[in-house]
Image (cartoon, rainbow, N blue to C red; front, side, top):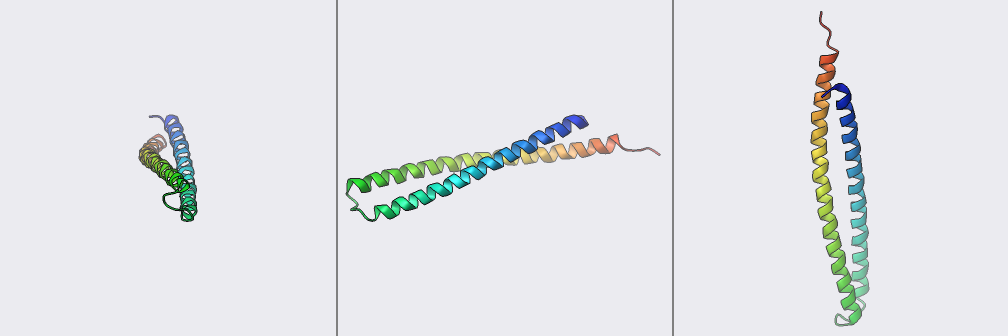
Length: 109
């Protein structure tokens, strides 16, 4: 890989890593909001009789929030794996770039 190609690839990998980090941050914030919503539903649910229709509806909503939280956790784990792959590829690209620079600008005396 040439010097310019390696530089372009490194820029692309850096941008991809930033994009994944942003998505992970959004998922983390959403999960925090879901946890707060679940906590709020639990507090409201304590005011009702466990056999009441409102209490059952709240339990269903909490279950849906739990499923959504699990899906977000799986997506976050997938993004983390992809981020590790990109970081590994970036390291390889950096090493190759450094070798190219060293071999290109080596002066013979």
